[in-house]
Length: 491
Image (tube, rainbow, N blue to C red; front, side, top):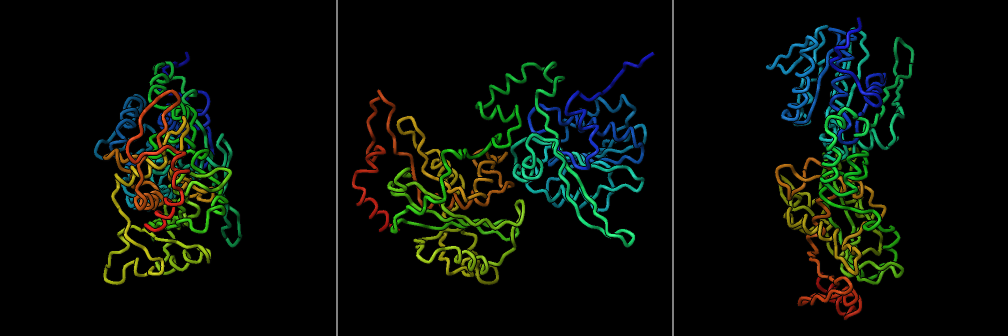
């Protein structure tokens, strides 16, 4: 008689592919409702039942409270299979002797506690919550087995979070559609013979449509998602679009905010230019060069009067959220070498922290030739300025931003659109993210305070202009010369 009492089985599609995948490192998921946690639980059941007491697993999340749902789900399944849970150790012992422990890594340094441990499976849930791959890399080093058990790492996550960029670079960009095996190789001498060894990784995409169990049990889940955000955001949730981020702090549209780097060639010689700077050594530093538009250039597509154009940047990074450890004087030397001989930088603003003396010259003093002045470091007003300039005004039904980025500002365009709200302060940025370019942009915007005033009502509406408020055409045409001269003289 066939035993039909099946306690858990993978769904057809990505979940089955995950359990059958022999690749060392698998990133699984990428969209909401794709059955990521169930996939990890199922992978452990398969692994522990195959290798018995030689199977040793660790299940990781960023914060302990985030483990509650996972533990609760395992308590629904594992006891029926003979598993026993130790509340004090937060550890399951499976009927065959395999052990699965739940841990959290709130700080990157927490991963160091597991150095020297041996695991055959490492599960990392919502890996995009980790700002850097540092703790993940340390856990990867714990994967070894004296019993010859094939070891592996399984990671899950969605777009967004402070680690969005490094996860996207490592797992999504090589093949957004998934299933392409990426190998890293190196030569190792074994018994006097040089051999090439490799580690492989793969992305297995899982979308809501792959989780038929959820759709059958909760058919209104899709409807609730569609009521929770914009069409683009819902598309990201449902399809796992890594170019649109859930909970982004800023909205940057490449079609609107990004211009050709050649635009700066059309700027008149008397264009006001300035620099902004956010210092970092262990973490990246960021330098931005800006031009203040006068409404005349380039002739084919003039940027609005008073808009900021970021025409160059230098982002000092050696890896995901990792700095170059350059000294201040070397940064100064390289920075000044990037500026052209006839490039007149009228002023330069930097984080006030660089002016602090701590037993010796301040960073600002070590970079004296850059002529930094203290930036206004207020956070919420600063973010409001950045957001207002990105949003700009609505003129004749069209969005007219007051801040633009050249297409060579790759690190700004990589980091700014994916930054998240702080969980404890919705009006502030999550500082765990790669926010160095954002901070530096905030200093730039606070040096040129701006408020929306280029208002022209939609056709048919007759709304009076407030005092000192002008239409777009007024600003371009009325007393342009006098305004430009006033702008120059005020610097």
